[in-house]
Length: 353
Image (cartoon, rainbow, N blue to C red; front, side):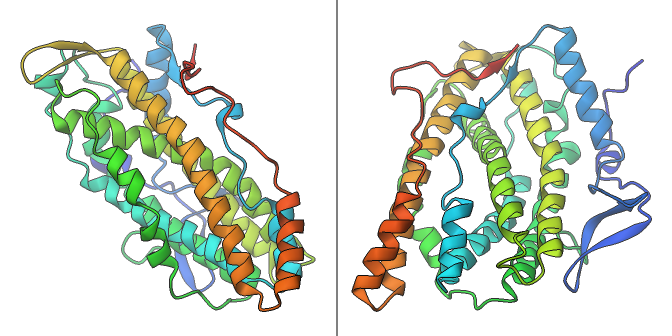
């Protein structure tokens, strides 16, 4: 029989690496087997996620899915970022890469998610599912991947090392974190809104949190492609091979995150949720509604905010007004002009049969 139940120790277990991964002077997680990079904590996590996914397929359950057309292109684009570097404006690219590393470090917060009482709030059994293993190794493995664990660096440190290798240890703007926090107000207010008040706050908060993380992790595929192309550019980078390889290792590591979050939400939408007053609510209605809200919000507001912030920053960094205006115009002319393809009242295509 296919194994569907795992201990936390199993889901945190590593393969037998033959050589370690280094990010500059930092020993990072994962390692090499037969010369190929292998992600950390995958010895049992990989087959576990595949087994849970296979079970969903056998049950005929659709998977939560984000079509490529819903994913906004990274801003600035590779061409825009290269233009800035060629014009001597290193700070915007340094800021972008540093922001990514900080966000990765915040990923450790996933271990702090307070799960609802599944036995009391889900009518059907969840044994042998990804849902049942969220606090039994999956969240902890995810947290360690992102922020590192003990003497091993994680994605935060790997992004920092990639930035420093590519840009030759650039000066880090002192206000990166402050600017990040300054743009979080609207998102925080929206996150506090209750969509299904009949459910426990823990249930709704868990679904919202997982949905948001899944959207971010899915959008990251475009970030990886952007960073690998930019940091691997021999014309403008100091150590392009090392820098691009580190980002590619992070890309490989993120796949199990997308996979287990997808499976967990897909399992939940196939079940019946029980509200605090005993009212039954379709898991599909809850997951689809919350996931669509998170997806639409991330694909519309974040790109707009990033665009406005960066265009203003370019003008701030150049003292010569005429040069600043000329470069800003050239930079903005390279914008793809991407917009979210679905109207506000249009139902989103978020299921993969």
